[in-house]
Image (cartoon, rainbow, N blue to C red; front, top):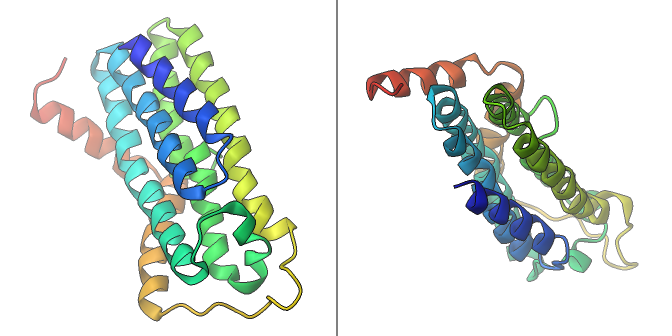
Length: 209
């Protein structure tokens, strides 16, 4: 399980770094996220499984949100390539800020649900004397931050091409769904007690020791 976890994190993150397609980047990063989730199973105790469940619940919101926003953008631009998203923050600021929240959450930045999930996983590893494995996970999280931020760099730090500055319009339904995923991603990063209690309750239902 340790070998699978480490291999998934390294393969997923280092392959995602070189992708120019955001869709492929998120696909490879999902492999890495699977590696993080398996960290909870390597501990094989109540704390490890609880940490895994907490991360899975956080992952539900941030990953669905990232793919949802990407689909919205790709449908408007007819491309999911990074180069096509230059200056998109100027043309669709709200949607791009939402994407920023999901990117930071997936990389585990504090005040997001992704940070809480990684914190509990790494804590479970450290308390089980698997400090080296926690360090491997932490280093992979740093690598992932590079390609997640690269998406935001194209959106906000690059200007759109001349003559291509028309604002993009999205329906009310798109904003409602996006905020329905953004809000828990942020709220559970600050007030995460419900996630912890739900994970502990789920474990107790199955009598896990």
